[in-house]
Image (cartoon, rainbow, N blue to C red; front, side, top):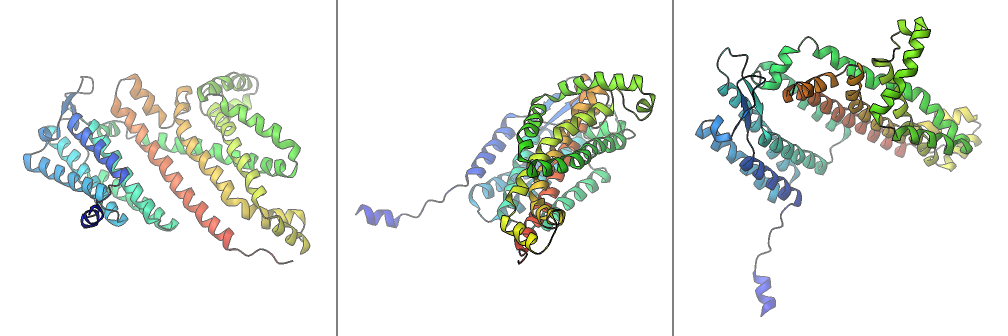
Length: 400
């Protein structure tokens, strides 16, 4: 009797675990946190405003309906394409809502009022972003598709910002004030991260090859680099200020090249030192993963050791080496922020100025592009690693 009853009952639909967490977090944020923070000027403390207070009734109900539908999809729909469409729809509606709120609360021609996204907006945006990322992961798109999705997202965002729809948001007000400095600091940030990475690749790649060919050097070299990695960034910047300052004082040519105790020089040197360990370690691991049979076959064909290194070992180890480079680039993009404390410049300048002035919008002006740069670098290099890994796996080993 119990067996028949159990068979007659419909199977209970299972809820998506990630969807449960994201839906609960979004609902709690929408109920308990402000959607925007309104300030009469940049200095005064803000007033929390809920979604119903900053949008017309029909607009607030529409936003809530879309978010509720998105939550329903996150909870019960397993199809990755539908989950992605629902997440993107939620992001678009959320962006339109915050832009409408800022335009509604800002009097015409007023450049003093500040309208900042509140906690509810940021939590909902993070939840929708995680939902979209999870959907893309489930779809398993090819590397080129992932790069095109990233390019499309950046292009659409830039077009929306250039259109002027978000001009009344406080972070865009801060951008308008610092529009002349922003491109300079952005280019300096990229230069510091990329330049230190390039120097680390030039030194770290041969050092990794040497550690692979001479195993006795592996332990002391990697041990030394591990010790450097444990030094906090701000401490390493401080340690480098004294010798570089002394070098600039004694060697005028070094000072003429910009090598000083403060500024970009200690930042580049510190980032270079931090970058060595992942590159050297991944070079060693990648070369050790190369098939011994492939190396022996290449030697049997008459290749010299140098030819084997450049034609067989390094191409096969390249995906692992690029994985280390990806780690370094993302790490450097974040660590360049701290370089602003010693006059290195970069987007960290806005972050620390905002902290000093208690201006969270100025902090966001520097922090948001840093996150976008790090995420974009990760996606691009991940796609490149996957392509090279497939190519290395598909390439036949040289026949003896």
